Image 1 (cartoon, rainbow, N blue to C red):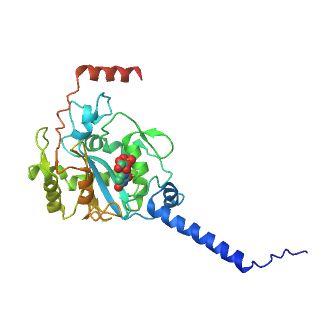
Image 2: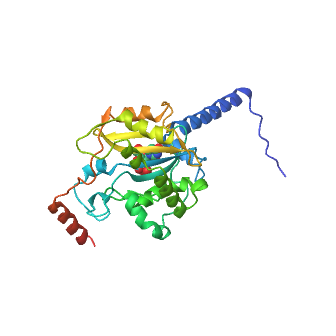
Image 3: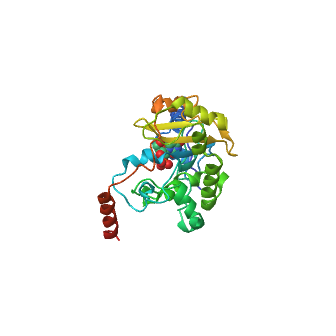
Length: 286
Ligand code: U2P
């Protein structure tokens, strides 16, 4: 039988090949660290992303979000006449990497509303959607807020939080245990449409309570998001988002002024006409 013999590569071809392979390797490492699109793909590793480093409990201040609400729908927590949110609500429980990036859409699992049916009253109350729009899921479609958060973030936390039901239970438990609304209230920082509070005072109140530094995000001078960070055993740690920041307060100063407001939540008094418009829109869409 004839055998195919491959001639040995001469040394200059070998060195060109070596350089090309080296550059591809360096590009991949740079992309993974930079969090670019190719990096996102590489990080996910085809549904096998690397293990995350810590958790972010992302909280939203409804008084700030709800200022944007112009029309109501039944799914928008801003529009409730009863059971309106009275403090921070949950945005999500996010597994993150120490360099400030995060994995997303880690498994092909899809959100199943039946899994959380026994949690609905708690989720509606403490983890409401604050908009009418639907959000993206991990399968190229649209869905409810909880679907987005579970598929994007929850599927990446399963090594610690387990599957869908346990992810939501864990998030609710952490939210109840670390009650930032209470901590701020005890320090005198309460919802108000007239007061402005020192950013440093708000950060200090949380540092004193939990011995860790949160990250704050503002919109129009009002607190919009507050992130508490946790080790994987849910003991508090500093939020060290971003490779070029040393602690969350640096980030907070970037997006918040020195004095910030905590807009009233109950002050969302949508005009009757606006509510009626949305109700008729809702009915006609059924
Ligand atoms: O900050 C804008 C959006 O980016 C996502 N985010 C941000 C910080 C972080 O540590 N992790 C993270 O996922 C959030 O996207 P969402 O969950 O809303 O789709 C955040 O809203």
